[in-house]
Length: 376
Image 1 (cartoon, helix red, strand yellow):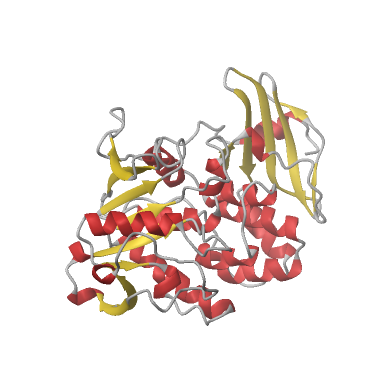
Image 2 (cartoon, rainbow, N blue to C red):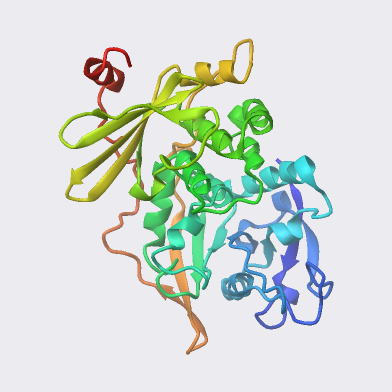
């Protein structure tokens, strides 16, 4: 792993705000930076920032970075690593993204400061922001980090509330949730071809799919690939994709399952790769599930014209490395008081994270579907 990075030298920053008005440069030259050798620097002096880009286009001020700098200075951190400083932003394309992936490895070992608050989102819609694929990629890297994750926020009802629970939800689920949010337009992503870096186990296949398939077909393909080793995915009802236009995918006729469940096969070039299930008979509202066929990966390979052996298996859900789970702390900036204070931890959240049991799925959902319709 890369050992030398450019970092903010917080000891040489006066005040809280990092970006100042009056410049159009992506990073003002007045901000003190230095080169840091991670292996020769005490870990207590280091932190890496995971943040929501919130740079104001007119003033070039970032509230999230301002809070992160203030927090790190209060805790005695000297060097703050962040993408805007630590990456060579003159690079473009694959070369830049390769460096982004290398930088993301820091989230596995260094103390993390997270800042995702955005006043443009309501408390009820903020989870769409957290489900952005690159944010999920960084959050998943925290699992196994033996140090700490400090969240700093300033918008009531966002990171201030149940931050750890949101993180654990991301740890417990796959990238497919985020992919389908991108597909339905509920989560943003600048370049959907970036999934080849987020899911490197499928890099070549995703690259080919991005070149050969339409946008919607490509995203559904990536979501199915991510689930190819799991067999089933519990979704939220706002993931519904049945009204989206696809070119090579289509939904088959409805089949009535158990109770009020309705199941529709998802066909790629006429061959079933998954099934879409909706059940509005639950006390918790509409439940949506997507079952993935065991041979869906092979069907996708054939559809893309890929020959030879290619190992397939779900990779979005990760297990903790050595059981290590970072310590979580949340800090909130009260704009009226101008302070950054710790938020008391949720007493119902234990110290150790354990993966939740998989959602109870039929041992072989295909058997039930074929029993309902022999031609299926």
